[in-house]
Length: 185
Image (cartoon, rainbow, N blue to C red; front, side):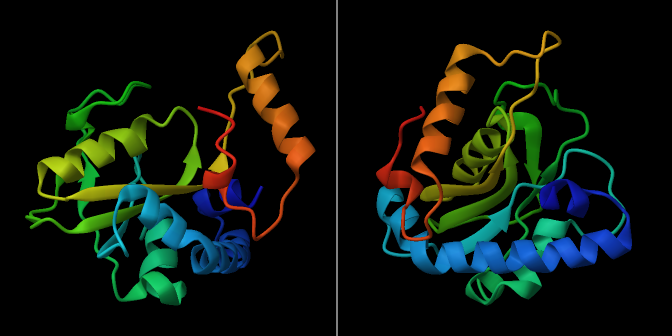
């Protein structure tokens, strides 16, 4: 619900939910960013960026506001590197042309990408490919939400049902890193 609220243009609900999500992401990164960095093969990410919006939005992207202003761990490393290319196919498959550079040339920096919701992974994967093309050495992706589209018949595909069953059984603990429990590929 919080993720959906910050994507709306209803200022009152957006402000309240944004602070909660900033606190959640700050705490998670405090505990687990080093796990993601280690998995990516770096000691620490040099820069932090976001997956840019793929639709028209009024004002600054909520995740940019979080990473650039609210989360102390990312504030000094944040840089908006890419934007959506409106001429590119924005379907559900990863495409390197989905995003275009804002003019930055990277020189081997490692990049942590923050994404609000992982649905198919097409945006994050497309972004990682584009970042490598403009000179990033390593890219790590952290998504705070997972979305499953509900089919018309109301029944999730078996792989999603299994994912949800295992997630409910495991439950949530701050000290449990998602990389220690990669039970969904």
